[in-house]
Image (cartoon, rainbow, N blue to C red; front, side, top):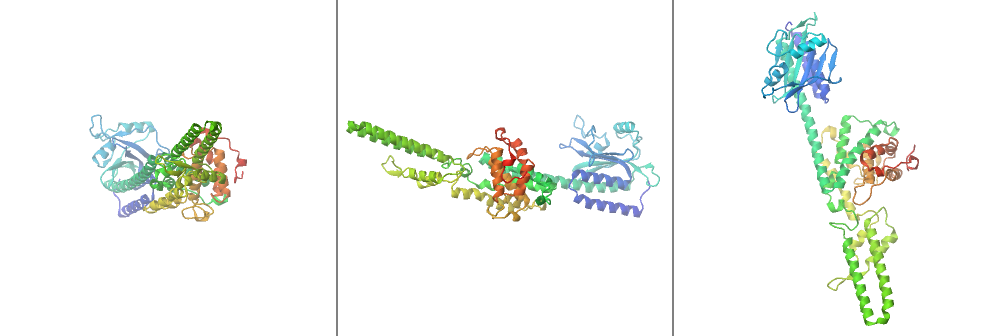
Length: 539
């Protein structure tokens, strides 16, 4: 091949400059490699080219991509992967460097290899290349093999070009020294671009691992919340994909690319990270009187003391006056029955539930007025003020103050997330994660945002958070609800301004609930859902 003139060199420099700009804008590794190989072929007018990359332990070179114009061959990259393409070992069985294969030689010694005619060269073993020629009725003649080294001289890959062609005659010639210089410059650019992509990938993986580390910490603190932190992101993505496909007018502009998906996934993983600061006894409070232990047992003891005192009084009365035995025994039995009824009632009240009636709250307060005498002869009410407050909780097991502590986790989550220097493609994570307790009517917390002030992603996460909580069967304070029960409650929420009604339509119509249930819910909870009876849903 003849050496290049100034105009041709200038054109090649222009191609290298364009490649450098293009590589900075490509995030997909396959697209990046394909652009590198196509540019290398174009610069040298090569008929074919191949890229090899080292495996994880750098013991061999794996085939990555090949293009050959004459054979109309294109495997790897944007085309199907090649099958049965053997890897090239970098070391022999004794651990010595493999210097027989030209690509292994270039990789091990980090040197370029330029051969004018492979059939006349005896330095390397070209048996595989000759076999390739025979099978494909091709003739490999000239060859240029260049190692791709990053800024730390680490091997990123090997670029090999075959058969330099004369643009005027179409004949096969040798690669020139100038060709080698340009391809080495291109290989250096390519290696740096690949290293940058690998570094970005590693940093993103490290960040996601740190996020999972936080969730492990929450899991160890509260196994129930830990599962919640894993399931909500999954359900969020299921609903987001359904919304992405939806043709509802309200969602016509909601479309996601891969970066959008990663951003939402990250927000899902972090949506409850503030719970790492929430006290365990509040998160795990399974009954109204539970702190470190369930204090209903203390009240049980007081009832036993009341029983003891009543029985002692009865014995004293009958000992002093035998004629009053029958009446005293009847009074004792009535009193013991009343005590047992009250004890059973308090045990039931301690469980918590959807709603406690005003009458039951009043009865707790009445029972609290009973008096008992301790071992020092001091008189006390059966329930103190704090116990009475807990046992008269209207719904659930948390007092007003404990509810504030739980709710504060979202404020902590927002503060934690807003303190991080998010890159551009993850800048919405705090808003998505921090909005899952807001409501469409503006009555949510912590900021009281209305639906039009929230992103669709935040509204999606709100539905995922509620449905997971309703259906989860591992919460210490409640049993898991069936699909029908969960959808019924969610449907009411869509009607009363709690959740986005359009997203609820998608959730039901696209059977997102069923996809989630089959993956995470107990089979006993997966009942037949009559969609006609789901509030807020229009078939």
